Length: 563
Ligand code: C2E
Ligand code: CA
Ligand code: CA
Image (tube, rainbow, N blue to C red):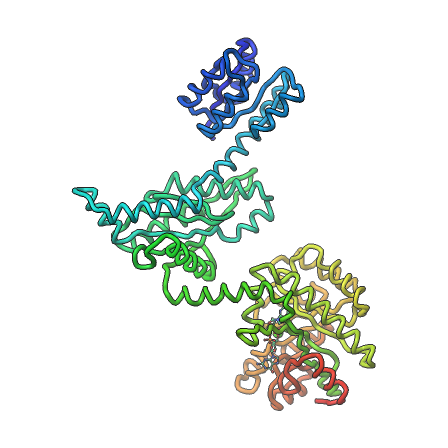
């Protein structure tokens, strides 16, 4: 890192020399010492120091506060006040100027050092917010487009014709930045974002303007290009530059970005439209897993707009009580009796009708909505099951699906046990379904959570078994109770002998580990026969019943219907 340049404004030369020596000894470079506010303003403009140390009582007409205000507003150079006395009035005045630091003389060297560091760092945040914003972006696009249509002579004309043919507008969003801020804290997250932005400006050629739109989202105007491919090349350079690590507090942090590109005039004739289309293309890049760029395409536009609309209505769906929990019976294969139910979420959207959970659960997960939604499902299912038990179906259990994000929630076990208390359902009648990959993603954390559940007495089942990671060793390392054989196995049992063999092996493995086995998606009597012969414990599927609303499930219970 280069040495920070500091200017000292102090009318007592002995003190000034002292401070200068002390700062140089700890690695700062002193670019100037002046004794009056007037001189300070002139010199700050000339020398452009990174920081000004400002005494309040100075020679000449102007005091330090006025000088610092001037320097801050004209040159965006931060100031730290130094003063021998601190009466209330002076302090008030100082506070009004939003200073970067305030130090009372005499001071310790290490305090001054720390105050300077904080000021420099804060200023760096600030300069990030000082990046051009949406308004400047709009202004600049309009300027470029207007310039192009005016028409002039010679080289300029040629250049303009160049950019009139294609002006690339990029929408850039840093991937998973919430994870970075989650781990490092908000202010460090800002530093990471800031250094990424700076690095782009310093090392990528062909950027006309970089504007910050939101926390981790930027709009970039590139210089005009002849072909789309030239724009794509620059986008790729941007991705490469971003993916170099940022070092912060000794850690290497890697960030990536998703970029959407729209070209004037093809994808829009004015700034808002171009930005919106670049944004939808960025969305597409995100869906591809991030760290890539995508061109705007009209069909992308269509999909994302629909998706955006869906997201908006999903956000308010919980309040509008558009969700319902359905219950699919789980049946003991030997007795044929209903032994429990899996709670499955349904969304009745007034416009779109029934939306599949496969579609909206990932969306809710992305949006963070899955946390309240998942908790609502859990509470509803527990309350419902308690009611059925009180109505005489005493031994029934309910299985609830947990999403990845819920599973990672810190106080999940507390929340679950609170819901059990609240609804009065005994823990042993609740089964939580998780997937293999959720466990494998962070084995240590998963081990802790599962242990807590075990101690609470909750049953734990592995959903979609066999479709994810196939690391069987973890079966004995974690306290699972139930394995759910995925329906992709069940539906192939009859056609594919290998699948049949694997299914049998899974059942035997599970039994040898004292785990129960449920087969999902059982649709035909043949599938049932096979599972019965091979001693699967329970089944669930359309053959017996699809997921149904609570009222219908209740009818089913009361009818005493068996497999
Ligand atoms: P899943 O946990 O594997 O749920 C089983 C899915 O198979 C359900 O789809 C169910 O309706 C369907 N199914 C049941 N029997 C049969 C059958 O015989 N044949 C066929 N082809 N399908 C059958 P659904 O309800 O559409 O749910 C899809 C997925 O959405 C679930 O897969 C689960 O991962 C997720 N999901 C549903 N509700 C919730 C919830 O409350 N929370 C969370 N986190 N995820 C949920
Ligand atoms: Ca499930
Ligand atoms: Ca499943």
